[in-house]
Length: 264
Image: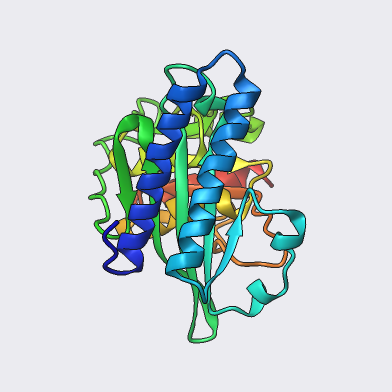
């Protein structure tokens, strides 16, 4: 592994964890989906925790696969550097043969000038053969001409299994098409690569579901916020972060206005 800085480290770790997950998939097979999910979660988590302990021993880590006691460790809240990782985002998709919409998330949160910010991050999409990272942020696509309105070509990524009802109403209001995609990392990556123009979610997530893809989205110049327009905040005592909007920047005002109208 070549380690140049935190940006490169995030990309290296996410990519290597993803390659290990592909090997787990190949070795375990798809006959027992629970066994495959468990094997994947543990393999990627173990690798990331061991690598960060070795390479960034002074930093704290918040991982989806950590124990409850580890997540509640108060030292994380006073740390200046915290890695927020999701070793396998989209376990359902990982366990389904042929699906590529699952990811590995590695993000770095730092305390700077009295506030916390995401400073580095990477999203590996192993089954798609690519990693998006702050080391080399993707170039955002432009918004299609005439994208908003009845003849809209705007596409909004939503959950495959639990798309929020209000997002269906929002799509009708702005004339958008809903595109079901698996993991949150895959959805936000789809915004950055031009497969969709926005991702809207409400109804439950945690910091590790979005920290890494939001870090990359911010580096790329995308809009990121809660659905009420307020900032996304990380390394909180309660890691719940229940809603999110990521979109091309020129589309955000229309989506936020539509969300406000629907919640009146």
